[in-house]
Length: 486
Image 1 (cartoon, rainbow, N blue to C red):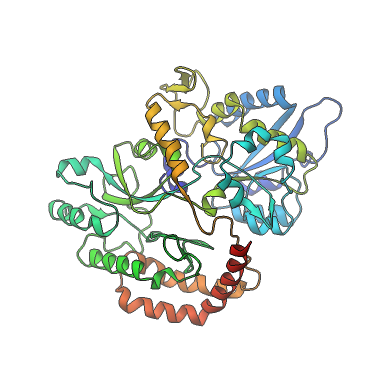
Image 2: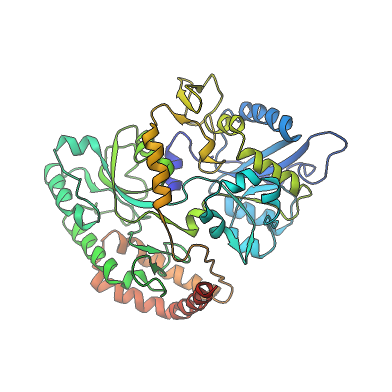
């Protein structure tokens, strides 16, 4: 996948912006009381993103199916990416009634009691969907031994790729076949830059994070990691690890030599996927991307990629797209029934994710479809955060061999040593805020190669220690040691 949030912004199945009023001024009859007699239960559900332009049509079709199957209807409300955290924090803090939501701060809010315990509800009401989940999804979503979410079954693993604009690869007759690391890309980047100095050889910007063979107990933005090869028992600062330092030096050399654009540390949007402003970029892919298929569709041109990290099942991937049932909901069982239906009913899910049958797509065999002229980017919901990707029809361009390769890659992907580890930050909140402030000063310039890491990393490390890095590291290590024992 493209960094999975990034690809979804760019693909036709893009990120699903409702106003605050649309979220806070809802008729609170929705999702608060059990219906009388045989009237369908209306479940109030919050989703992140921008609603499709044909939302009313999609939901009319969907609700007809939902009512038919489980005697319920969905009152689906969208909240934009920029407003999501603030609005969901308010909804949860004030105890506003709702039934289902895309999970916000999953671990913290689970521990606070905001979400219903689904440990028994999901296996009971959604047994088929639950049984289809890779065990990594369950391990990655247990909080203090309990399950509070139903995860979307999709990209259970991810790996980082160096992705190339094939048009430019072919134009300059460049060979990328031997690239398995940043260092391996040095030769081809220099060849490209010599032939086309006006196009960014490595198109990166201020949000870029250098990748390595690590997993992260907080986020990749923070200076805490474990190695996923070799000794994985120790919490380290990845920026001081020898392997990452070598890559940071390489980035600085690329920057010095013009292979990375001069404004990379402050640039936010110059290298969009569908533009011809770049030769190489870094993306995230998972098994449901079918190699470069989804990336190519999103770019509108052929992209070819080479993996630079192992395929890894992580807590972050397991929690990528979780749906939770509110603890304030009066309809917990019905909400579980709906999550079961959404993740097992092909007619329902495909109509939401692909759009209106007959207008956007038509069947081409049992489980394949052909896209029609009516298939448009903002006229359907996204696959990654709607429902079970494994019951989605595949495009006629996806071969049986590609599906076999997908399944083989999932079986062979390794579990991260910290899969299921959820760090309790309650004892170090102040220190984490201070550390985040330090990283905001250094991260972009360090990762884009703008500064010399041999000079800057010691300064950054000193500032991190002053901010409380040792205290946080010790707290993570203590909890991680206990996790490993269990």
